[in-house]
Image (cartoon, rainbow, N blue to C red; front, side, top):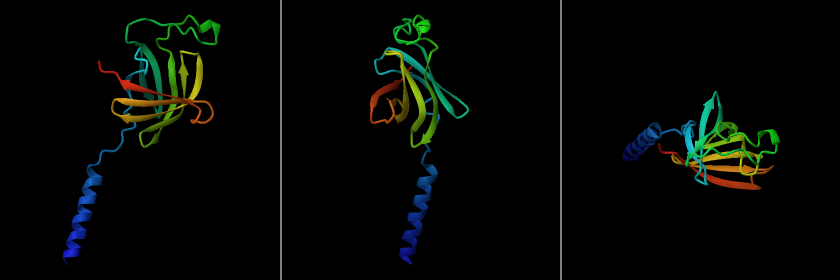
Length: 144
């Protein structure tokens, strides 16, 4: 009988732990992020089940141009309101994928995946073909 009580106690504790464990919120990446260089502000929003990141400004208030864009007609446009992350979907386990990133520092687009490290750190991995060939940046949540 004591073994049965131990088993029932263990099961009850297990169920309570599962019941109180907070699920990973797929909207946890929503909000404003500062890029790794510390100069760009990107707001991540959600439309239906897709996530998009748009440059909303810079930390120093300067308006930068899209001077590295391969399209000469866009080289003089402001980077403000330019979409730099798009088409992401939540894959589970704090990961978003199947999206792309635009790098205004070289005017190129890459496949991309994102991982939420903690509530204030977002790992961005841009790559060509396989994620093995790419670059990783760490973005931090912008505190207003």
